[in-house]
Length: 221
Image (tube, rainbow, N blue to C red):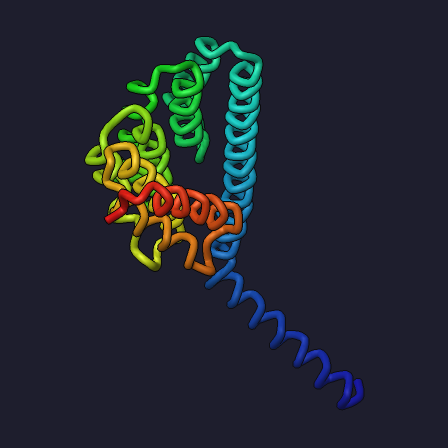
């Protein structure tokens, strides 16, 4: 036997002994880890499938409720939205609450619609931006179905210069002020909108027109 063959055999025996020692020390743990990875992957895939199935189901139900509402079947739509609010998945229960209030308004039940939006606005578990939208929706209904104080109580806080909903909030408050004869207050609000370069063009145009009407009445002092 040559020296090279001898050393190769020795090295091979050493490698085998090291491999056996490693297996004795870590082999069972490696098997456990591998099994856990397989189980974890399976559970994650199953969870993803469950989430997707629930979301798709709720989305389909929401779409069906919208179809009922758009077809003039208000009572059936409200029942569908109510069911979705109770057992829907993800954002669909909240969407159902908001849409149900809109359906109530469309059928002329303004009291129920305003109450629905107020409930969303008062729910601290809902993101603030959605709660602000609910406040604004309630205020817009109250322009014709409530008092200036009612409108102000919902949107006064939204009229500050940094709020993205300030234009609509100011318009609602301005219309409510005009309705109650608070023309100076209404004029100030409409001027704020018309001079705000961040306001949508149609909102600025409406505010310019309303401001001109108030000034032309001569009663804005």
